[in-house]
Length: 327
Image (tube, rainbow, N blue to C red; front, side):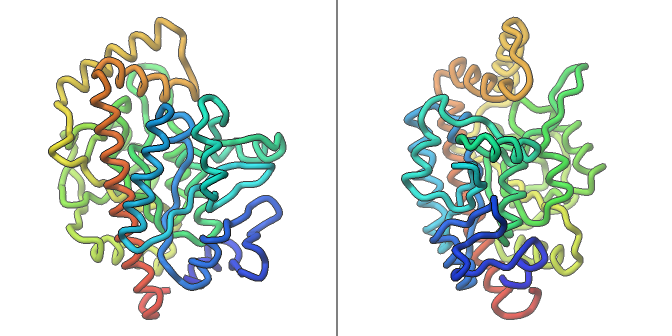
């Protein structure tokens, strides 16, 4: 999609080695896929660096990659490595992120410092969609997004602001279960981020099928989702479309149980003084422990499903780009 690449950042050329800037490099397979106008899906590395323990993070990689490739698309994992932001990590590079405690958690605001340090940085949604957009990738996937944490203290994920200023489409399963879904949806509305239900008219809520929050927009096919993305590109709205894909009913958890274990995990985090960027990984691990691993199984299932849907949407969107209808 050369027109889109030009709008998002700099045009990528194979002859140029995939360098978008001195500190942002596009990996070989992704360079060729973009040059050939094939579908590509951007992926965050924080989910494997901090979100899931070893070896389940290795399993996550395999399931997400298989789902994307089965949809005819190419996965583009984003991370900080050797002083560069890399879009399209190789298998060997990606393996480094699965080692416990090796990678730092990196949001968009952290990218300059992470590159200057030259270490290993696992990128969150905010950093990953920013880098993907710079490389010309229009579709990304994750599990659940960050948002407004419950409670009187002001704790808001950097994901939300980045979603409001980075163009593209992100497939997710709504806010993570540790997030206040109503406050998060209201904040996204205030920021001008379009939320679209995939096959549903209520906001998906990560491990559970839905929160009691109605969505204004709904699509039922990848073609319909790609059409919204195409319209956003034409209109140059410059914000991310959140395509909210609910967890499959067979693996969805009971809302009352999730609310209970989340409350207990929050109490544990408070008593242990867990704050800041360590809070989300801690809470997810605590919930997995309290549910005897069932929340992790559900998380892995929705990550793979979101990756597959992102691959489907990216394949349709790339077809629109080739036809010249939109970009």
